[in-house]
Length: 110
Image (cartoon, rainbow, N blue to C red):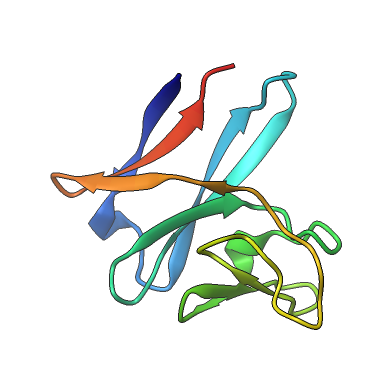
């Protein structure tokens, strides 16, 4: 089962910017998800924690379909959550959709 959660109107998320959604995982631990708007208005969502040292990805620089971590400049794909070589690692991705100008994020039921 899944649960679509309203994030914000698309226009409230700046192009090349992000919003953070805070939720709980299946074990009740706090999780932050970065919801990113690309220059072409596509929306992606990934775990807000860099797989390297846990940097807040939502505070990084969005370029193309990647985010540069603000701590050590690791480049993370917003499409699949994978670190760009030569770095190795991956962060979780989440499904998004835009309906009637509103951004939604899919969260799995606990």
